[in-house]
Image (cartoon, rainbow, N blue to C red):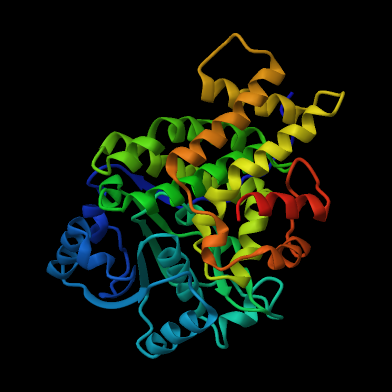
Length: 390
């Protein structure tokens, strides 16, 4: 029997080496003015991107540029929108990591309405967006957030009253996700590691989520296998195109699965920490992944009744170990050990390196949501987890 499920819309997906060069032929609008939003300096440092932009100019497009150096804030989105509201380009293209794509997604939506993006953020604003946006193309240059396949843009405001919230509407899904692994080849090893762990976390958490379904489970397992194959290889050798392709594909799948199944405690921590401190999203996800999953597994092992979550963790253990000779508990323990070892192997940074200390942990834990996590924890346990990665 197949249980009930729903699947949200996905973008038109164009995937493969060299596919970025098809960008000039994607647009149907007669408008020749494109707003290009990139990461800080990414189009100048990446030869593949420069070639694509040159091809757009040669095809007769007029390009306006904006760049995002960090995760976009409400001020960033409002300022970019204001600069382009009068010219109002019909097409927005985001080329970069998750921050650039989230910024492009938000700008494409805010060009159609009045007011600040803050007015429309979940849990912050009071207005409902109509869902109308400019034609939007997402071209990722990192393999991490999966934002090229999601319907939300994450907007952050850092500080004591900070937040990390989403501008969300089902119609905000990019019209086209153009995923070319060649664009990720120049991504530095440390960013490859943190962004890759973000995708890994999204796949694992959506697979384990209480809202998971048969399609998201299948996609998540496929992506997790690609992460096992490609993550360490891509970190160690950025020019390994097989590894880069595996990671680009896994990140894309992670966007689809998280949009439909939700996420767990690791991303709960990323949301609360990211609102208070200037720390990259992928760093939080990467550094907290092993400890959160170990706590999940240890609490599950104390239960007498075997649940679907036990079986799912065992399935992960089979993928990670490549073995067929362990029992259910053996596979679950292997999963916890595998994630611990991967954390050390990748040299993932600790949250304490970003100004977080023991005095902050209670406050972080008190605002951390993990309702879709398969295991529920007390605040004291959340503090324990955080302290292990200070």
